[in-house]
Length: 201
Image (cartoon, rainbow, N blue to C red; front, side, top):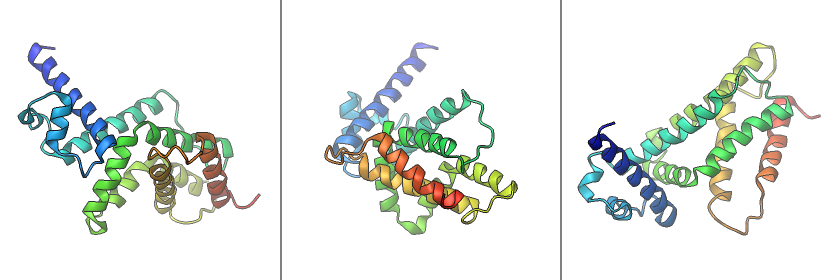
C-alpha cells in the first residue's frame, strides 16, 4: 500500500473511531460532522474525502459490523439449524445479542436515524428483514421439513429480531441499574421464543 493510500485509510479509521465515541457521548442526532473531525484531529474537509454525509458514515459503520458477523459465522459450518432445539436457538440469539452489545454506538445511532426518517420511509422494515435473513432461512427450512410455524418465516424472523434489538437498545444504553446479565437476557428470550416455535413443553 502506498503512502497516500495508507494515510487515507488511517484518516478513515480515525473518523470512524471518533464517530463511535461521539455517538456514545452525544447521541447520533446531536453529533455534528465538525464534532467528529475535531475528535479525530482532522480537518473538516477531510470528512468529505471519505463520506458523503453523517448517514453515509453510519452506513459504513453498519457494513463493518455486518462484516464482523460474517467473518465470525464464516469460521463455522452453518447448515440449516433447528430453531426448535433450545441449544441451537440460544446460540443464534447469543450471537445476535453480543454483536449488538459490542457495537452499541452503531445500534443506538441506527435507532435514532430510523426515528427521524419515520415509518413511511420503510427503512426500519428493510433493515430488519435484511438483518434477520439467516433466521428466516432457518425458519423456511423448518417449514419445508413440515414444522408448523406461528406465521410467515420472514415475519417471524423480523419479529424475533425486532424484539431482541429493542431489548438491546433499552438494556444496553449504559444504565448501570438494569442489573441484567447477558445470560439472563439470552436465556429469557430463548425460553420465550422456544414456546412460540415449538409449542408449550
